[in-house]
Length: 77
Image (tube, rainbow, N blue to C red; front, top):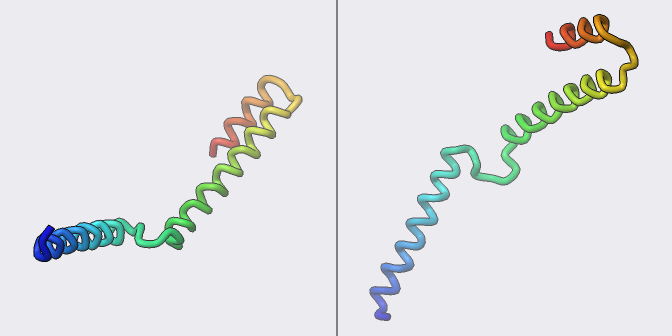
């Protein structure tokens, strides 16, 4: 491999790396610890925890029929 071929190959690798970095920055994924994404995930986890608690309450509830159906409808709101 000649010197100039090596230069071209290194330039191509550097260009591809730079382009990928620009793409990830544009998408907002430039860092693993992206604060906006972490906040979004925290809200999603909190919402899922609330839903699980509702489902646990429904599953362990010993009441029957109409009362349970009314509570399910009220929890949907």
